[in-house]
Length: 216
Image 1: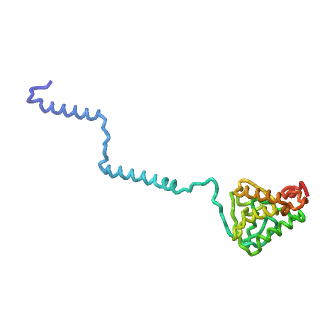
Image 2 (image 1 turned 60 degrees about the vertical axis):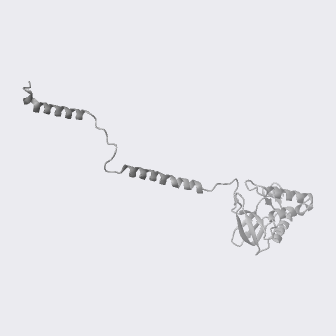
Image 3 (image 1 turned 120 degrees about the horizontal axis):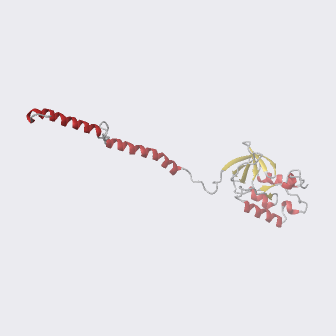
C-alpha cells in the first residue's frame, strides 16, 4: 500500500509511464503514408511518364498501319519481249515467262488454229519490244508463269485485242477478274462477226477441252 503522497509520487509516475508503454505496444502501428526517403510528387510524375511511354508505340503503330482496300492496287512492271511460245504465252528478256490473263489460245497441236494464234501474238508483241505487265490478285499459275494483262506503249490492251480479233477464247479464273467483262464482250463480238477462229465452222474444240483429251 502506498504511503504518504509525498513519498509515492515517484512510484505513481513510474506506473503511468509503464501503462503508456503497454498501450503503445497493443495499438497496431499505422504504415507511413509517405516514404521519407522518396519525393512522392516526383515518383508520381515518373509513373505517369512511364505509362505514356508504354502507350505511345501502340498508338503510333495503329496510326501508321496501312488500311487494306477491297482489292490490291494493280502492280505493273516492264518486260522486253524475247520470244513468243504460243498464242497466249511469251518470254521476257529477264527470263520471266508470261501467261496472258483471262484468255486461252488454241494449243499448237490444234492445227491450224494454234499456229494462227501464235502468229497473231507475234504480230502484236515483236521481239525486242517493251510491254507493260499488269498483275491481278493471284500473280502466278501452277506452272510458275506470271499471270498478266499486257499493254503496249501505244496503250493497246493485247489480251482484249486478241479476243476481239478472234484468236483466243475467254478463260476466267477468280480472283483474277479485273477485265473479265471486257474480255468476254470481245470474244462474243468476234464470234458474232465470224473473225479469227470463228471464220469457219472447223473450230469446235475449245483449248481447255483439247488439253483434257475431251476432243481433238
